Length: 302
Image (cartoon, rainbow, N blue to C red; front, top):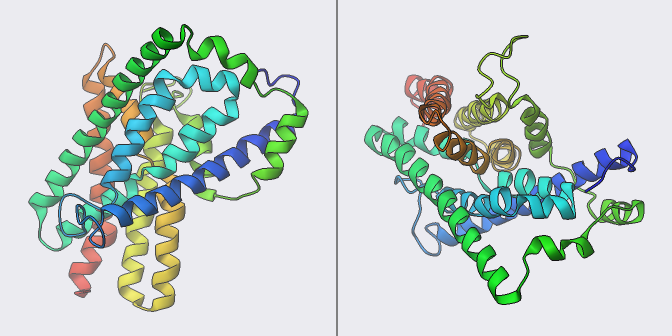
C-alpha cells in the first residue's frame, strides 16, 4: 500500500487505531478460549497442571501467525499495511501472552512443583513452535489449492481490495476509536528489533524489542501477583487482574516470539533460536522468582 500521499497524522492515527481494535479482539478471544478450555467447560487446562490456561490461545495464535505473518503477509500488506500490523502485532500479539505463561510456571514452582514448571516451559515452547510450523504448511497448501481450483491466487485479485485513499482511511479511523496501551508499547518496542546494542549494532540478530516486552511484562505480572497476595482485597484483585490480563497480556507475546524463534532456527545459525528462547525464559523465570516466589516463601502468603 502506498502511504506516501497520506498525511503523517492520519497514517499514525490509522496505525494506532488498528492496533487498538485488533488488540481488544485478541484479548476477548484469549478470554473466551481460557473459559472454553478451562475447568468450567472442557476441563483441558487448569492452574494446577503443565497445561496452563493460556496454552490454547498461544497455540492458536502461533498457528494463525503462520498464516497472517508469513505466507499471506505480503498479500495482506498489499491491501493495507495497517491491516497487516493490526492482525499480527495487534490481534495475534494480544491473543498470545508470554507473561501469563511465565506467571503460571512461577505459581507452580512456588507450590513446590518444579518439575511441572520445567516441563511447562518445554511443552509450551514445543506446542507453540509446531503450531506455527503447522500454520505455515497448511497456509501454503491452501494457497496452492486456491490457485488450482480458481485459476488465480490472492495476489492477482487483491487490487480491488486496496485501501489507499484519504476517505477510506478516515472511515476506518472513525470506526476504530479504542485504546490499548499494551499493544502500543509493544509496537514501539518492536522498533528496537534488528538494531543491536550500541553504535556498532552488536548482536543485531537478537530481537531486543520483543525480548524487553516479554521479560518486562513477566516481571510486572509477577509484581502484581505479589501485590495481590500482600493486600488481599477484592478491589486490589480486580484492578491487578485487569492489568495482568489486559495490559500485560497484550504487552507480551508468544506468536511473535515463536515466529522469531522459527526464523532463527531456519537460518544459517540455528543455535541462535535456542539461545534466544533460553535467555527469554530464564530471565523471565529468574526475575519472576525474585519478585514473586521469594516474597511468597518469606511471608508465607497463601
